[in-house]
Image (cartoon, rainbow, N blue to C red; front, side, top):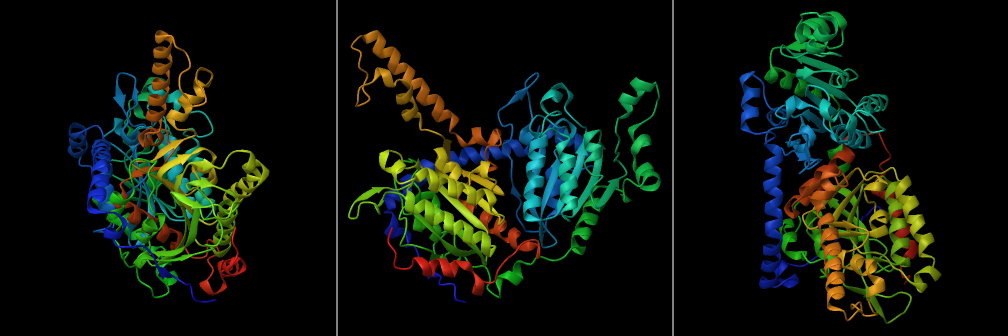
Length: 577
């Protein structure tokens, strides 16, 4: 039982896709991933060089320069929420790239943390609509993973022309401070560096942190000098009101004053060095991280852009798991789903992925049915597997490419509603960290059942070909105009003008729904956390899985000898269904 029976899976690319097909699929994906990189660069630029130059003239660094200096040399930042508010304008055509805040997982002194940095090139780091929600989402990720939070504060408060969309409500700006409190109550370290403006709500954000550093240019105030001058006719600067002289030496609201950005960042790194080291190496048990036998970069040519085309899901797992080794659990049940254990970055993780193409029909032996759909056996299998991962403390990765649940008289007779409810209950009550990846389609209740964002995965990632919807555009167009169509979905009327009106209407519905399924729409609305290229998927998952093992003692992590996973595999061995 102590042996985790990992076995080689996958095949060389040449056996999976011929050169022509592989090239065509890469070429179809290329412009979508080029668009991703261009839009990232646009967000990273903030309001542009002019505003970055203003920051530099003050002797300060920009938010992303601070992040780069804070991180361990040679390490990678894993941003989340890059495209929040993307393409939305406010007032007189103003934009808020990334909602004016950078949120990223970063390694500092060998320990992963969540960095939350106000983008001081965007309206002096103001909070826009969605900015509080983005900060709170990042805080929740840190809370779920029990990793430290570092606030790089340079915030002039709410962007007041849009205050009604950021101030009130359950996820309004004030909820940030509740999240500060919950992090503190759960023993999650919080460090704050105040680099400049820290007004109103921005002034409250650092206070609950365990350590607060201020530069000589920094100040923390409930109300700035301009407001006080207007209210009390008092001539005074914000530094006079709440600079380091006040808050370090008089109020005690900050701990240490430092001369500049560089020194403050060095101090934050020193504070991180004092925290317990990562437990990841302990849980690796002497097994180092190893690349897959087949390059993960090949995923870009193995998954067709057209969601109607099938591919071999095992080839995806083979390009994510260390050495392309995998233990498939319960292969005898629910052919439409693959679930099992692999190592990623040397650490065990559970994987669930939809099998594509045709699969065996357990209810009609000898027959086949379409994959990428949840049937009774597959639902029961992944529900049991999800519970086992939770019991064993194994982080769980959901790789979605799903059309939804089976429908029809047989599905209702077989009780798919109840099986689906069981799976939803399981994923809703799991405490082990879960991560969701929308590989391509994420449709209907299947998206929910496979730990979509409403079911609280720690992070949900989308690719450039993700499609998040209840129903495909063509299908919805048919449903909308159903009374005008025959059994073959052809327009019934013979009147040319009416036929054209119906055809144009169906086309408009289809185009609108297809547009809504663009992953950037989901990202700007915070319906997904980040859009990534296929070549980045393994590195993101490797980092996220390592974070789940970093903080020892915050959750139960069983050693493999006592996994309930072994019992589950033994109990279903030899069973077909």
